[in-house]
Image (cartoon, rainbow, N blue to C red; front, side, top):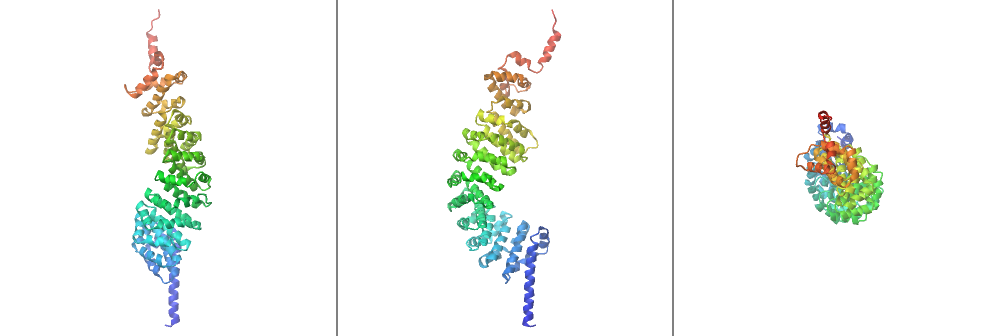
Length: 507
């Protein structure tokens, strides 16, 4: 065989390998092909091509493996079992930028599925190689490495700590200062995934000066970047008063409130979540957000939103109201109660209804004035229906009952209480009757209305255990009226009168 023929054979072999990996990489983009590729044993065919002498074949083989591993956890596990990861990690340090991107993609695709698979990526020494890649000149390599680190860190605190221990955080903070928007986005997202697990991990992120750089990006026009920035600030703020104060001290308010009008719903949701995480800690932090116009802005946001994106806004109002009478009144004055009432009616999901019920309890539990604001919005019958509805989740029933009791114990607005006399079960009814027993002795107009509306008659029909709290409240109400009036409205009184008529002998 001549030298020319030998070269032709090698050329054909190279073309065949190239065509094979390109075809597999293309087929792997379509879910319907994945199972067939797996059954054909494609993993074992791709593995040796990662060591191919031709760089494009290496890169395309890695890309194909990444696409397969990305599809589901079974395929990701197959990549681990085929002992492919150590080869990728080794090549991350040795190969060109195109291969590095493809290798980081495979590591990310494996790590994303579960903590166990992410641990397998860590165990093969990937962290050091990925951290070195964060220092690469090529922004695409930085982005791919940051993405893989984020997918490892997101699962649990132990994995996030491993990412921190590898020295990634200072380099990620440098990445958010890069000019490329894609690198900024992924670096901010990874910082968020690290900070979310514990106060210690969040503090590590803060100690590298991340807050100041994140705060600068809150007004960036790029929606995907803002999503990640607000997410990271929220994850830092949630752990402690000190961390929340550090975020607030970065002077992000009131400028951040403009993002509540952002066209991107996830930007709006993440801003509201950040505000929720700050307000939950102390009255002082809540007051600061109230002063910045945050409560009114969130109430407007609830009016413009639907579904799950409403949830952090609803909870934020509840947290603000929980701290003090004055802060709860700030929610009332900003017309928060009617807006929450709309959410209670409009939202089909039980967990959103439960959060709304909880927020009403926080608003109405302070004083009669607060309770009246809730009661006047016709919320009490709705809470009662949710509590009694067998279709409601257990959590919704518990929160509706608790909110109802909290508001009832302060409510002296009798027109809102009266409908409950006819619908409430005994455990709720006693709180309703209790409020009437407090108000009626001091209000002659209310006493008259209570008779003409049928309230007094209804009270006489209630069966209460002798000596119970309910019986005492009924006695207190009855003591507000002449004995003959009480007797007149008692069950059986008309029959007793008729019997007297029948037995009456005219003179």
